[in-house]
Length: 175
Image (cartoon, rainbow, N blue to C red; front, side):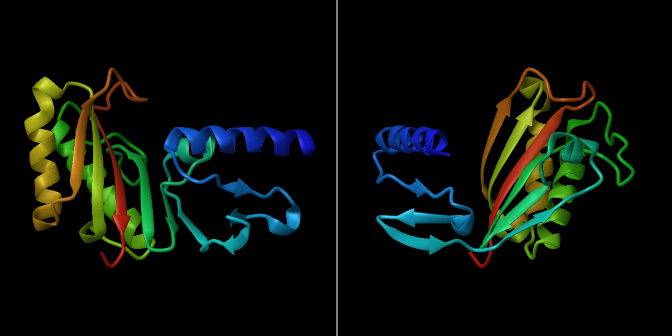
């Protein structure tokens, strides 16, 4: 346990130096699980809620579709799958974006949010020269006047060869 604590302390020091921020201490004692000390004061964080879908990768790779801590919800990379797990919108980046954003909306609603709470999206596109307009228009249609901050990035490939678009979203409830 001491070696692990030393490694964690070294990592915390490195991050603090890199970010030019005060060091955060993570406590490893079982009685302090989930608690973090800031400047010597022990603080407990808000509860964590998770949402899962039927996507096979979630259980296989150990992640949640969305996680809520306090008033913030993070939605993981989401692609266009039907409720039965079949690809949607083959060779149509706009349709894939629309479906992925519908799944994002469902995940947000499951955790008490909505697309109206989204403050940032990230769009990963396999052929941005060809598909940026279709992806952008589907994004605009889903969000309307919400207009979250967004980034569209071209990537070489996604996990499935049929996938043209993957969407991530961050939401702040009541914002």
